[in-house]
Amino acid sequence: MHIPIEQKTADSVINLCLDTLAKKKQALVFVNTKRGAEKQAEDLSKKTKLRSIVLDKLSDDILNVLSKPTKQCERLAECVKHGAAFHHAGLHGRQKELIEEHFRKGALSFICCTPTLAMGVDLPAYRAVIRDLKRYSQRGMGFIPVLEYLQMAGRAGRPKFDTVGEAICVADNRMQADEIVERYIHGQPEEIYSKLAVEPVLRTYVLSLIASGFVRTRKELMDFFSRTFWAHQFEDIEKLEAIIDRMLDLLLDWEFILPSAKKDDFVSADELAKDVGYRATFLGKRVAELYLDPLTAHGFIVALNKSMATKTRNSVSFLHTICHTLEMRPLLRVGVKEFDKVQAKLAEWDQWLLVNEPSAYDPDYDDYLASVKTAMMLNDWMDEKDDEWLMEQYNVRPGETRTKLELAEWLLYSMIELSNILNHNELIKDINKVRFRLRYGVREELLTLLKLEGIGRVRARKLYNNGVKDLGDVRKIQLQKLIDILGKQVAISVKKQVGEDVPEPIPEAKRKGQLEMSKYDA
DNA sequence: GGACGGTGAAACTTCAGGTTGCCTC
DNA sequence: GAAGTTTCACCGTCC
Image (cartoon, rainbow, N blue to C red; front, side):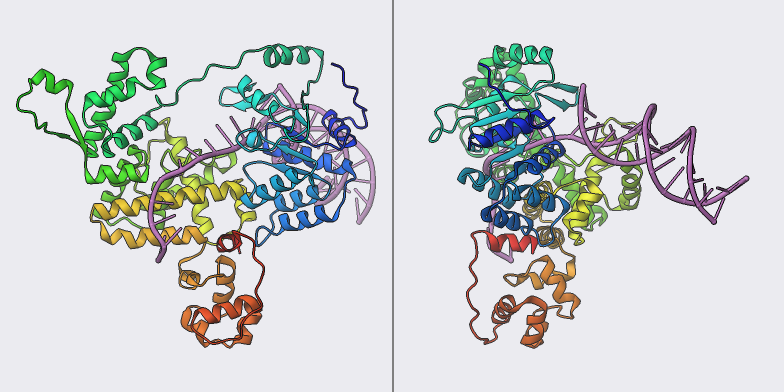
């Protein structure tokens, strides 16, 4: 089918979008990098000539999601004014929500995105413009899977509004076009493979099956796995059993499970070997409940024991231990120019780290450095550095920071639970302090002020710098002075929280989730 | 002659995403 | 592989 598109600019993606706009329709543009998505949206927004009150309001809301807008926020806000947004994992969750919501309502005409919007999110458009079909991976630049192309193409055509949709791939020349047709239009989607065979997953499930009492013996365990898609695909049952046996050995070694004696009268040694019973230890049960990879849990236990034995413990000790887990991956990449900086920090922190440093020639060394860099970022967040600073120092965007913070909090919680079981009570207070500091992104001295509702890192810092250092100070300070620092609404609310009788504030209309967010950002 | 700024070619660097897990301190 | 960034050599201008 030939669709004539007016060539208004040199950029064929923009031409396609302007044509979509002329049809009063919407388009999603898929690209292969975050930077690419931002650039494409920016270029497009300069050509749409769209403006409206709704878009201005949206732009304003997007700009003010963080207490202090980053350059990324400003760039997005500017694009949105003209009906085009970019969308990738680096955006703050609230910004993503706003964009999706306004695209659904039709206020936004275009979203230039990385594959974020191809998976899961229900955001169809009349056109899905697939600009990049190649993407960088560890093996270099390569074509994306057919399945992924289908995911993106599947965004075209909105069930309730359009009877048709168009998925358009962009090619530079005839040869490329032919290749795309051959590979993606006529090509077969890839086979789907079971992910169960991946060791961290397998470890986790073997433990949880035993811990939950779903299986009680080796035989039951093997029966369970023999009925999975993995076994169906793998076919070689003997090899599969060997893998599961290896997992069982690991869990036994780490004392997450124990062999349990059978109650039957007599079983031959041979039979017993084939069908030994298992039960989870108290520790193993908790690990399964926390949904931790047993390897991570074991790593934590080793680190916690070391901390107890050697009295090595400060916030960095725990921060780095959680960064050295599979759960925290992908870690922040250590760029060529950062190498020295991270290594210097490693030397500075060395005495506090609980996970041993591999030799510089070890293939794991780069990973270890990446775990140090990730810990550095989290440490700076706890040191009250803002998003713009983290972006410049570590190349992490607000969305990525939030994802890492959430993971870190869960891992620290798990670490506390394990310390509890191991009776390492003296560690609990220290780890908990790190957890709270991480959650709110503050230095230790602000922790008391954070107990107040409506007070997050920024307001707590303001109070502290004005001499209001604890709840007693909040009581002592004159209301008017507090209003000068925090504004009327918050000041009154805070005074009430410390038990003072003050006039009722005019209720402020709050969006759902705003309070929670203000805890993190405001 | 030397400091300075502008220019363009060459070398270098970077590059997607993410379910649920815990508990409310 | 491609786009963006940094580095560096080279040139012209001005003091």
